[in-house]
Length: 148
Image 1 (cartoon, rainbow, N blue to C red):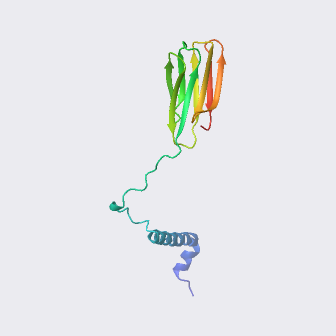
Image 2: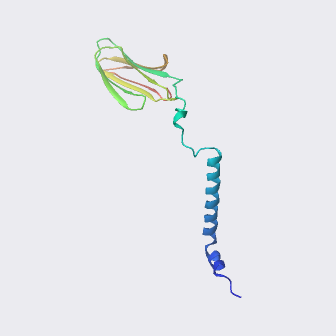
Image 3: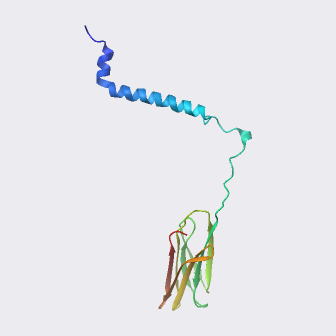
């Protein structure tokens, strides 16, 4: 008695047959779940947009450079997206404020001036989180807050 050819085929490719059957069953289950929860229906035009996301935890980060009023120099700082921005100052104090709703922001400021003393501060919501002062010829001050 000879075995039908299907048994020889299954004997050689049974793993592939099991995978194909499993994929078909998974596809049927996912299709049923999609129709059960109505996720396959497009958004009705009259339904309007989803609720607008309103910023609720606005944070202000202020960079300040302090020193003698007649000092001039350059300052580099990070914006809310982590990009480095540069500016010049012709008198002190110098400051800039950025606003974000991100839960955390890397805040960094570096300043160098033509003075013997220079300082920097980082304030988050008007609270000082880092402060540094530098002394010496053409002083350079550096402040960093990793979790502003």
